Length: 88
Image (cartoon, rainbow, N blue to C red):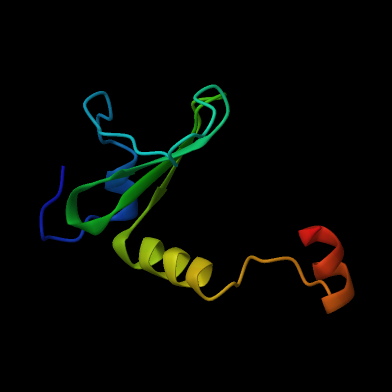
């Protein structure tokens, strides 16, 4: 479901996702996990398997989200002592 032309946010919500290929982390619980589908123009859809609710991201939004994940932007702010406690 990918093409090179960017897709407007409003147009993403009109897409038919019945044939979308949903990807999830290996070993995740199929009844309760996040799944992503790569869409045309570099856009993406993210859904929760338990509710079926879908969020749409334009190409620019998806790139920003992925880069934020890679940079640790969404990691909780904990100090080193808490980090060590969580790891053990």
